[in-house]
Image 1 (spheres, rainbow, N blue to C red):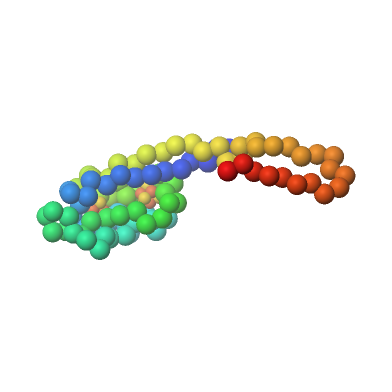
Image 2 (tube, rainbow, N blue to C red; image 1 turned 90 degrees about the vertical axis):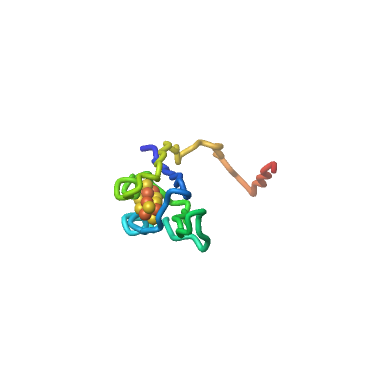
Length: 95
Ligand code: SF4
Ligand code: SF4
């Protein structure tokens, strides 16, 4: 089955830094910034690239400033088949 990968975009100028989204994230992917936005609030940033697109953060955000995206990743991409190897083989991958 194809794996689902998620991503979020936060409107940081409207974030109030309440951290409800960070508490709701099962992936521990969200954290408060070290800097403030133009209104003086710390804002939320993504610190891990492990978002599953579950939408928890977006659902709990009282400001409605998180957009969640999902894409399907085929984690079994077929690259090559090597068979009937009788001795040493050397594989060079072009950069
Ligand atoms: S969509 Fe889910 S996994 Fe992704 S950041 Fe939000 S709560 Fe975390
Ligand atoms: S729940 Fe919304 S307002 Fe609160 S920290 Fe997260 S993005 Fe900001």
